[in-house]
Length: 107
Image (cartoon, rainbow, N blue to C red; front, top):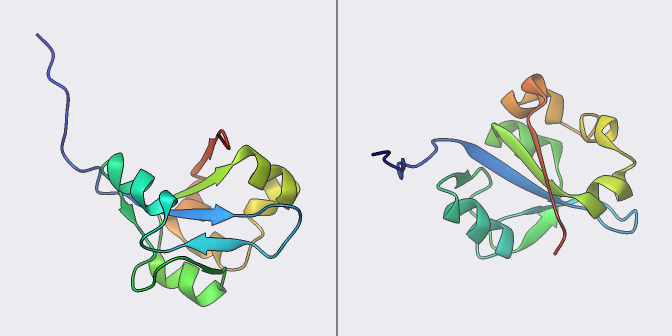
């Protein structure tokens, strides 16, 4: 008999929201993205604010996410995977150093 591991993942994730070539945003608490991150047992790396804020280099570096979460449309609007790694501060995080990217369906 197999047991399903239900322990928290001990991973920090940031969700980047980018559509129609607008300035990328990141999800704080009390957002759908925050709920999804919590549901999978991980932690939203960005704490201390509700809603979405403009992506800032300082916040990204301070949050030290293990993973970047983005939608297919968000990835397209940024111009592809390589553009994610060029966002301010991303390359100075564990996610950036390990190229740890989760891309999900927008629906």
